[in-house]
Amino acid sequence: MELRHGIGHNLEQFLHQLFQVLLVGLTIGMTRTVVPALAESDFGVPKNSFVLLSSFVVAFGLVKGAMNFIAGRLSERIGRKQVLSLGWLVALPVPVMIWYAPNWNWIVAATVLLGVNQGLTWSMTQTSKLDITRLEERGLTLGLNEFSGYVGVALAGIATAYMAAHFGARLGILIFGLTVIVLALVLTQLWVKDTLPWAKAEAARHAPGATQTSRPRYPKGISSNPSTREIFMLMSWRDKRLMALSQAGMVEKFVDALVWIFYPVFLYQKGVSLPNVGWIIGFYGFVWGGSQLFTGKLSDRVGRHLLNVWGMWICGAGVAAMMLADGVALWAASSALSGFGMALLYPNLSAAVADISHPAWRGSAIGIYRFWRDLGYGIGALGLGLAAHFTGQMQAAFWFVAMSMFVSGAVLWRLGEETHPGLNPAG
Image (tube, rainbow, N blue to C red; front, top):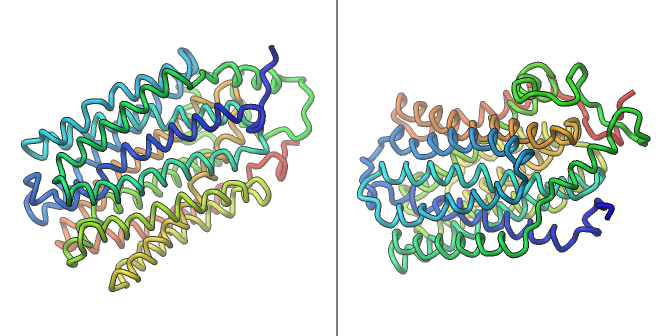
């Protein structure tokens, strides 16, 4: 039977994958508000120990980055569904470890497992949807993917804040986390299909000599069956376009690391209640997620490049505005501004990578891009932790991140190009 590409032809499977990424977002979101805000009172982190507080996100970023690298290559060998199932199995101990945690080291260890889970599951939900959709739906596909995931992150942050207020931080996370992870495991086994056959069918259509209307601007000088080392070199420095996209992906994670680590602490120390902290940070996630419903599709019409560059700069402006604002309404607006910047860049950096990565090795290319991108959690968390430590002020971390976003956006503007094959085709 011929495998057909397109959201309409694969709607049921597309919706199953969207729900999976919602569950992925809920899983990471359960740690985003409660754990940092209560690190001192519930988990024994000394006050103003900025580097120690950042350590769990450093660990998360290093592990998730490595797992993205592995997941892409592994999925081309054993299939997407197997990798997704493995990711959910790894997550099972996480809420139990947070519930039991006698000290902060247990939180770091739980976050390491969470990094493995996120690297395997989020990579696979994204890759699977790209497998079954058409080229002209790529921006929309990634927009819907990230919308679903980051709405999940925002919902979990708010839900766990209320559950922590009612049940206590540990029990609230235990109940919420186990419910989400067990549901995800069951649904993966019952309804998710392996989409690797769709990727192979697309690769056959892109073989040399095949008839195409708009051929993407694939990198030159790469073999038809490249090694992992070859793809890694291509993504990291050999192709300046892919290098520019990878560095932008890495630096934008500085913002997410800041929101995860210091936004809750900053707001809680300002006297904001835990549920209101959840709502302020939730605006970042809701605007990020909701806006991607149109920013991804918009890039299918007007291109990726300028949306990515302006997204970097707007997101950095939102971080800077957080320091200049005062009061719940202005903090929420600043949070939302960063969320909108993320919505412009987040699906479209991935879409740009997918545009110029051949279907035969797209899974590996996306995995390596996501390796560099999520390594930004570790590098960013360490950088902002050190900035706060050496200045003795949390605000230094915010300025470090804002400036990094402006500089990275300039690099992307200078070295990148439009990748949409319909707007800038090869030849």
